Length: 462
Image (tube, rainbow, N blue to C red):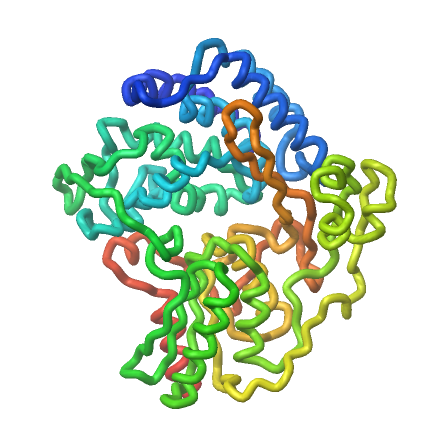
């Protein structure tokens, strides 16, 4: 991956420099080269301070070279968006799906309103439309340009700015993270002009920015319940692990509905879930199983003076433990390796569902959603259908937010390495019990082969 990363950065420098200048607004704040370089240096130092194994999924020599090259290229005043483009690939090159340079709040809000999300064509790495909140452009259309900028610039910037531990997860970042590079390239606009190809014909469309209040980033509310197969199968679409109290109410209402209107099987779909608060998953599984389970095994962490100073003892010990607090700076600790540590024993639950449960996963199932699937896999909580998760089961987490002094751009860094509850090969994701690849022709035709397979399994189980 390291050699491809350098290649993508070289394309990006050539392709985006004039584009950003063309869309820069006179109202945007401008930062001096010294300020931007100082921000990059402070981010780099923070990464080295808090990371357990910051170069575990990358080539350190290549990443350090990219840092030096990016620093040397910062020679003129930059807007906030230009600074993001200059810095984000440095940390994307770490190939950690949880590490990323984010935006300040106003640009972040604009990214959440960006109405389109994309995917890479399996055939030629072209950009195709994965979804449009406004319903203007047909899904599966080939994207030619946005705001007059060719699709390759957006694709290359996304791949450079957002790394991942595996190739399949890296490709998935075009879908899950593409809105942020889009705002960096095009700015926060009330509408975007898109040229696309559908059914062999080229067309233009103007797509308005969407109000996404109360919705998951991938579109729609974070979780919904419906019935399929003429009411015989319950279907929970769990798009985001967010808002514990809201999710608790949702589960109570949903499983009361199932109690009142029984179904012969339940499908839980986390294929588009990018994670959030893993505590929601603990609650979910108690509604469908009485088996003991947990989402994580042991953790590897580093005693860190920066985190101790910024968090204070109470918060630091709550997150990392007394042993890490007492250990000398830089000490690497492996904790929680006892199989019974953190094991959840479900209590009596009058609304617990006892029928067959099918969990749908994909390459986009990430972070806390991946650990939701991992608990199901390691403890037999559901039959898993779909594709291997892009994120490996032994992965990073426990995010630290560093705010750059001048630009105020937030950099998210990982401070723990999480191990699966049970042994798995390093680099392997959650493997479905029933593997159903998502084929390009299915997406183009609007078919959902994974859900269809789950419904077929439910019919045969009934």
